[in-house]
Image 1 (cartoon, rainbow, N blue to C red):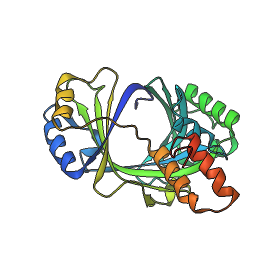
Image 2: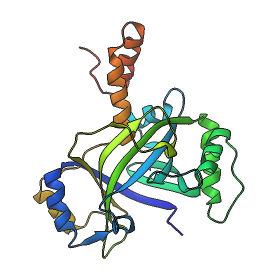
Image 3: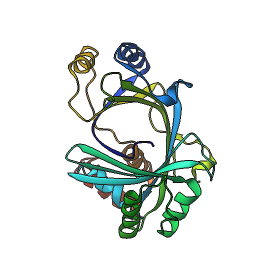
Image 4: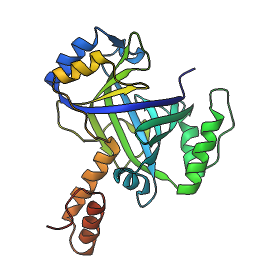
Length: 262
């Protein structure tokens, strides 16, 4: 059975194609490709993120609180309604990421999200996670808000399977047609040739990796795919005039994306 509960620290780095080619060659001395990359150089991950009508979850997340949470449906590739997907809760508290998920059919996930009622239990489902998702759907009154997909290369450490490094590129999003089976198209979120590298570990970063990152001048940065898209949405809407524009300015100031006085 696939792992359904993760506790780890995540460090993120934005790098270009040249850095990606250089560092992945050296990483393969210590690491190996995960099962999805053994047949394909890259594989696609697609997600539907849920939020309130007023974007409560992402707004809270971007204010950098000690605790934050997200809810999403995740698939590998473009699924069909009868394909297996994961319904996931991702929480972060004081830097520690906790991800909890349960497997179910895509049509079951849609119905669960739309009605708030859990599907009939099956052996493949994590009942505790189902209860947690039911609770989140109830207290927040969540709805699908964003489609987000990207192409990934992932590596596992040969000696320590808890150490994982992923490289995501071609990140694309859309805020309409919010169904995973509709295809993995969308508007590009980062520049062509950029990669989001994430170092995920339950322990501290090993010395050999720390030395490698230092040698290539790679330093961690704060980057949320959903947060980046929401920031872009607000900035695009700044073209609105009148009262709506003032409200959006206030929103950006609260999220510390623009200065309070200009």
